[in-house]
Amino acid sequence: MNYNWNWGILLSPEPGGTGTYLYYLIVGLGWTLATALAAWVIALAIGSVVGTLRTTPYKWVVRLGNAYVEIFRNVPLIVQMFLWFFVVPEFLPKELGDWIKQMPPPWSQYLPAVMCLGLFTSVRVAEQVKAGIQSLSRGQGMAGTALGLTLGQTYRFVLLPMAFRIVLPPLTSEFMNVIKNSSVALTIGLLELTGRARAMQEFSFKVFEAFAAATVIYLLTNLVVVFAMRALERKVRVPGLISASAGAGGH
Amino acid sequence: MGGFDFDVIERSWVYLFREGMTFTLTLTFLAMVGGIFFGTLLAMMRLSKFRTVSVVAGGYVNLMRSLPLVLVIFWFFFLVPYIYGWVARAGKPIPIGAFYSALITFTMFEAAYYCEIMRAGIQSVQRGQVWAGYALGLNYWQTMGKVVLPQAFRNMLPVLLTQTIILFQDTSLVYVISATDFFGAAAKVANRDYRLVEMYTFAAVIYFIISFGLSSLVKQLQARIAIVR
View 1 (tube, each protein chain N blue to C red):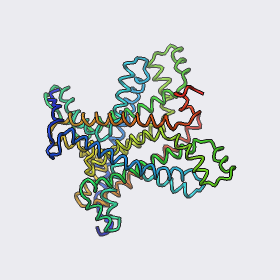
View 2: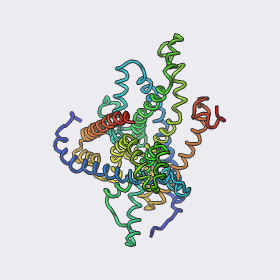
View 3: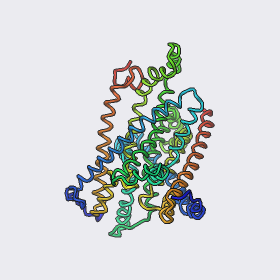
View 4: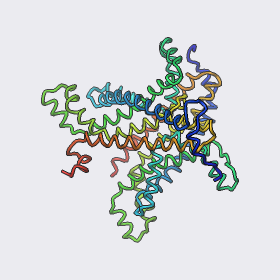
């Protein structure tokens, strides 16, 4: 192929004057992680509540939870991103909408991106939490009732502590998905990692160096997350379950 | 903003569906066929007893699954013209247009996800079936093609279709290479007539109706084939 590689470009200064292109990309990773982490907090909070409500015996609560999940699952992420950025501020009270639109540059994109990714991911968390609770044997809930616990107490002290330890592995892959999905925020102008790789390509005309660097940074991030989550999984796994016995010497 | 303007939708829906939705559906269908084809090949490679083959396939699948789709779209958008120019000995990159670029991207990207589904599908077939195939004198390709894969497809059909609904939604990301899919067409009208609220809401509603409708069908299908075992 007649492409002139020039890896030195990573160490030459970017036109914005903040430092080298490599530094520019790493700041991008910072924005990727800041977006993903904030969205993850929202997703965990809302997802846990919605997922739990969908296992309760109240029919209309379950239906409401299902509707919530279906809405956020059946609209593409980029469309939701545009709705949060362009449409939602129009429907808020005028002062609040104007305040959001007039925030200084990264924040006016950051806030809608976090809201969008948070709610988008919350329905996936809700599905996992629901599946986790339903995977517990029915006897656990009944035992709670037999001991005289209220429904709330049964969830709080019996079902949820077990369910969360079970759903942690699938939640790991959801966390990786938030990191990857945060790249969609570039469409509303947030300069996260992929957006900065694209900008670097436009400034420097070094297409493949820019995307290769971003690719390597994403892969390294994935590795770190996988190792951190594996350590966490080892800590919280439930003794006696099949997934737990593999490393624990069997029992 | 002065009220919701339905007029802009009335003026543009023919364009949105004839240009945009045709692009979206064609891309979804072709990428599904190509993705399942290559995904099945990748799954067979991953389960191969030749270590090099399974490591190569595994590496490809894990690489694709670790990267954001937007980044992969950019990669292929710039890479494919170079490879094409190199293969055609043109000495320079040959542009291939947004549609073919998107088609190649989604085929190769989704192949990694279809691969994992087909791998689970192949593993869900009982080992005795493979032995029976070999005992009848069939070779590897005949056993796979006539015994294992038909059952794997059948077992995995709902999951394959669910993945296709995700693919349908993901095609809206071709916006980043300025292709005119359904969402791209809506965005163009939105910016031309300055009717952002109406067009993006309309796009969301249409995507919702199609995705929700399809996933309800998949659920019915799942219930129907779950009994036949």
